[in-house]
Image 1 (cartoon, rainbow, N blue to C red):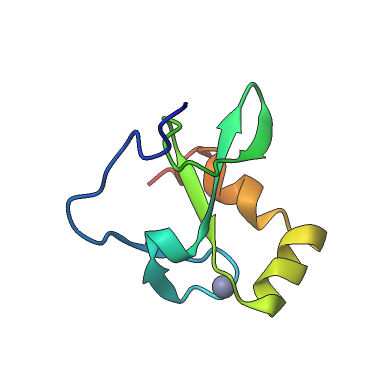
Image 2 (tube, rainbow, N blue to C red):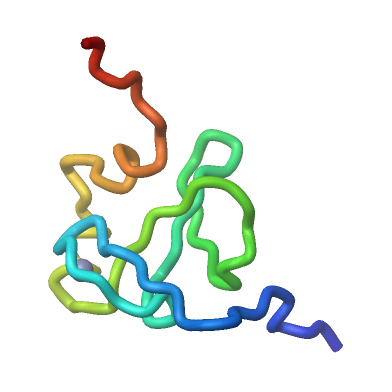
Length: 84
Ligand SMILES: [Zn+2]
């Protein structure tokens, strides 16, 4: 049997939803990571790399499925910083 809790959290990490920008416990959110140039959900929340989170709010889920602005993409792909 495969053990699910491979990465265990010590305390409750809080993450921000990329859509509503509210903060929630990581556990209550869906994590997405950039993997081989595509955005995949990280259900186990164990994949390494940059993650972006969507909360479980219905509106955010909807926005996630549309994501016209590419908010997830923006959160996941490090862009060049503004030059000063
Ligand atoms: Zn949200």
